[in-house]
Length: 73
Image (cartoon, rainbow, N blue to C red; front, side, top):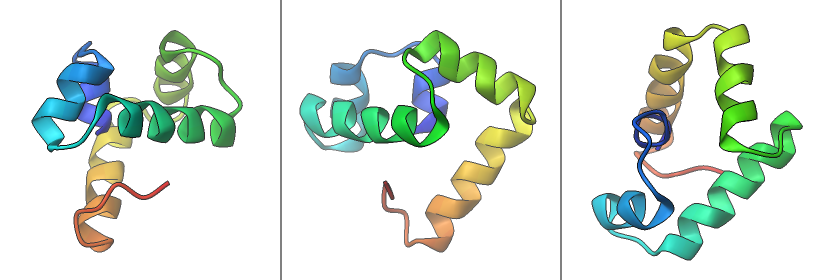
């Protein structure tokens, strides 16, 4: 999911690509925001940039593969 967010896609567009609903995407993003202490996608992008930048996406993809390709919250 991280790659979709960085590409600037809307929740609806991400949901369609992942075969789920916009609300599920909103829930996962809210959970991510809460865990990282950010409020917006901009703050999330700034957090990621300050904590490994591009490698962050690769790490999250690896974690998803480890979890069987699911979107863990």
